[in-house]
Length: 502
Image 1 (tube, rainbow, N blue to C red):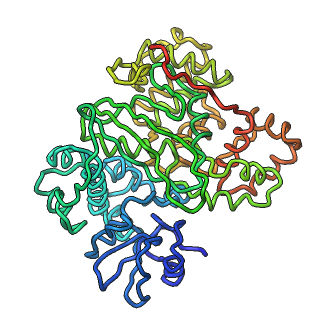
Image 2 (tube, one colour):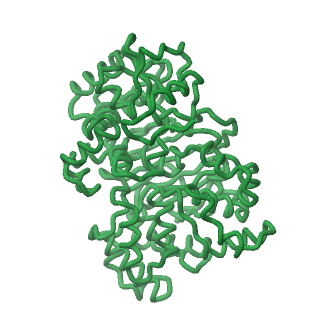
Image 3 (tube, one colour):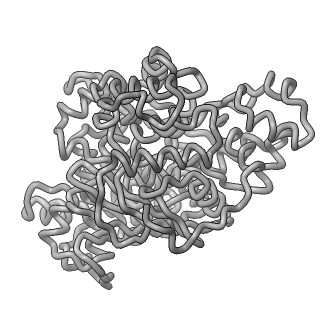
């Protein structure tokens, strides 16, 4: 069954078939609204399937809310993973949705969002309404309502704090929105309360589609730890966060969820200096674990492939690790040019100790924020612990990031970002493509010159030249093919439970 991408041209017949079969693959891709009840649901809602004549289909929760529908209390449609099409197509609408989820509209308004995407506010509003059924303000409002509901139901934060953390301008606006979207007051939504163990601490569950190879994602992250910024242990990963209003930390519980076609949850505990950063912190954690991936679509694409097919069957639901800060990812990529992973982590740790801002955290081993681009831009390349040419490339990249000449916030077009990166001295195609995969969430990146890819193919008994000549057959999921190849080279990493402070 094929659905049209994230736009207003959803095929009603295909959508209704998905609803009748309660197909979880389409949760977050579209929403079904029932005229007779005034409620909108996810396609897999367990309630009785409504008659075809009584339903309409919407490309976003905001569109359903704008049409006057309230969220189903049974299936919680606003809590589904986002549409994977946002990263596959990478249209202006998809890029805007990523920025809205990060809280850009709350911090910078529609004008700031439009500037980042590269359109006028009027044109962007027209584009989003055409493709997602709602403008940027309505989309941001739906995101605030979702964050508020989760905080109401899972924490003991006072309602004023919840309103503040969710991005609402006032408690009254928060109350009115919650009542309108959920047909219930905040007090009625509260239910069973969670427990906040320290000021600014919020524990949430991040929805991911299954299968989810959480253990191998943890192994990858643990293999690339930068001392002071990241740490990991048995079943968990934690790191510091440099957020718009202040520092924070996140601790993720990562485990396998092998049953296909369901929604699993990654437990995330955030400790934030400023609760206004809640939405941004959650969105960046979701990027890190590739939460919006559709693993069934990805894995099905490789079925029958003689190279990747067996790897997918061995590790279904493998994710492409994302990032919490695009600038950090790019800088770490340049540091890692032509050196081992261990060597790159050591050098990055030295830069963190020298230039990173020290922060107090409740997680042993997390002591610093990664140095920002402005700090690195002012460093003499000769003083950096790396070859002189790479030091110049690093400082040049940091200068471009600090000035805004290169933006890695998922707002600009990916091809434009790649061209800007390659134009910088010392930044080649491998670096630009790796940054596109990790920092921009590009699902269709392949690195044919990578030595790890060639070693993996040789180890699997394939001739690298022959396989690489036909790697286009893995489109549009070549990033996942790349991860499966790298996965064969990466042993499970025993992470220390109590790392020493940097």
